[in-house]
Image (tube, rainbow, N blue to C red; front, side, top):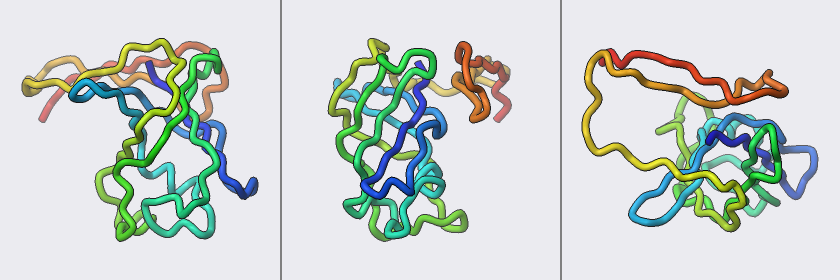
Length: 146
């Protein structure tokens, strides 16, 4: 269910085909693509100073690392913020949300949980580390503390 970000800009000197993990979530009947906002600081062009693409984005694709035919193409950045600077000192809420233009993943979207976590409850992190070149998604198990 985790997807790798493949970000390309009109200026080919910028972007990244293997940036972090993202996922699909369903909220109020609509599906959205979500990933880490700090990716923008890693892949941004020289013209991008805020949480927006400044017309620089060519395509943002998310794909299954083992089978790129399972992919989606994002449509719009929904939490664009032309006043939030792209730097580590002012990073707010490390997530960005996109509408989806085309979804060929075949994956069921995640749904937001309604009840609170309980101390000791098992939590899982699913995805690939940057250096993982192949193989199945990694699954890491933790216990909720606070």
